[in-house]
Amino acid sequence: MNPFDISVGAEVCVIGAGLMGAGIAQIAAQAGDTVLLFDKREGAAEDALRKLRQQLTKLVERGRMADVQVQQTLDRIRPAQDLAQARSCRIVIEAIVEDAAIKRNLLASLEALVPGDCILASNTSSISITTLANGMQRPERLVGMHFFNPVPAMRLVEIVSGLKTDAQVAAAVERLGSRWGKTPVHARSTPGFIVNRIARPFYAEALNVLTQRASCPADIDRCLRAAGFRMGPCELMDLIGHDTNLAVTRSVFAANYSDRRFGPSLVQQELVDGGLLGRKSGEGFYRYDADQRIVASPVQHDGVAAWVPPEGGIVLHGRGGLVEHMAARLAATVARVERRPDSGWAGIETPHGQLRVTDGRTAGQLAFESQVPNLSICDLAVVGANESANGDALAWAAAPAATQAWRAEVQAMLQFAGWEPVLFGDVAGLVVARTIAMLINEACDAVVQGVCTEDGADTAMQLGANYPSGPFHWLDGWGADAVVAVLDHLDAHYRGERYRASPGLRQRAWVLN
Image (cartoon, rainbow, N blue to C red):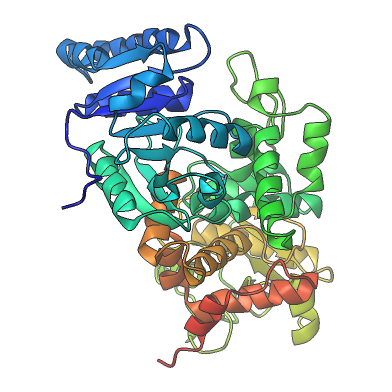
């Protein structure tokens, strides 16, 4: 029997009555526990309860909650006037300001108040649990319970163990998280834990493309939404706030001893310097109206002539989304089609040129190496994002020497295959391929370093970041050798440590089939 287990109806103390603290109090009360809500700001806990009543009343009006459930939930939450009221609680969860010194002072005060079997939990999103436990009399009872905003809606909770955290404490809060309706995932206390660490490339690769002036925020967002993401990175950074996003990046960068994989972006720094923080300031990558809706600029699309398969025939090289969609479309025509699945690259060849799926090299480099001037690259078409590819945006780029006639043919081919072609500058890895490759790479590093398991990484990213798939699901579909090839080509192109392949990923690529 675990002495730290917390049964239904136990007393829980939540410290901090902001959005996170109030959300944690709500889910605990809805699960049947008694909650003390404390905040040092006078009247803050009472204000949080009033706001919660308003929110729950709206749920009743929408038919998503009964009046009696609302009253039961509110009856179980009591504002605490003094921290000493936490003496009888089985667990205390702090959700105060992200400042290590302030949190450590609070934890020291709590240790003097609560009994020895009371769990102390921190909702920190970035501060090391090991650091917070340093100096505690009983560091083994401190654990991270990192919830995601908004707490009632987001299904994930990261259970974070520091060097001294007792395994029974972690197991107890895992069961508690499940009882509160969340999916718990274990993480070792390292910078960013799971989600905030693995997610960094989603922002960083978009910012890198913008730094190279290879595309614009709207086109980057369109292409990544087409790959299955609910929001593109630029609109998501606008939502989070560029000051907040940059601060997290700087924190992870510093905690990893300036590892260039986590380096901040000058593009984002300039936005922050100019006060263009996103939705909350009215402008970031996009401009917003009074209701925080994007003020969209009219998008001009040049007309694309319908593609007629050339008489000289078509060769489909390799496998994958682009090739299979093209094969399916061509089956309904009289075109002469040859399949070469083992040619070493994926794409389409006509008598006029080659369209290759990016392998991390630019179109210019591939054209030079293959001595094919009419050569273009297109982005990774993510399997499962949209099986029909019905008008989804897909990035493409052309080699410098490619003719205008070939560029027009590429656009027409992509439309024929079911995509909306989006022209990028000739940037290595385009945007979807480089982003997903780096997400996979970071997840592999996290597993190699014992931060989490493969299943834990997939669950955390899907539930905590709303990703359409987990990094290891992507890896299974794409193949380790192909991902390593993209990273190695990016590494060679940029000449730095940012794109080095994780040892765990490279080991997968070396497995003999």
